Image (cartoon, rainbow, N blue to C red):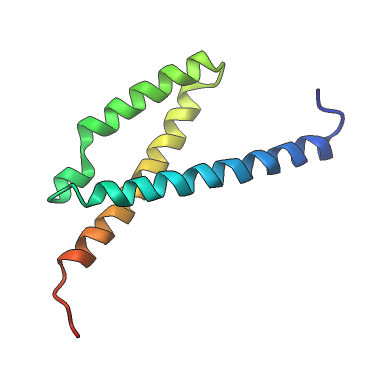
Length: 98
């Protein structure tokens, strides 16, 4: 149980460290997945996005978290990773200017 606002903030900071570590792992996997995708539509993968959203909403319910908040966070995160992946695709497709 939390004993003070400072205690809560320390716990949030510790969780943030874990979340950032998990995001870094997810980013490495996203970058690896990019190699298997041949075009922008493969990167955007709207059906896969909806599959992930459905799954995390269910997980949120199991964890007593707000499915709406989890969905919003995931949509934002997925959008950022799609942007990253598209940048990687464009860079890979660009002619080498050496």
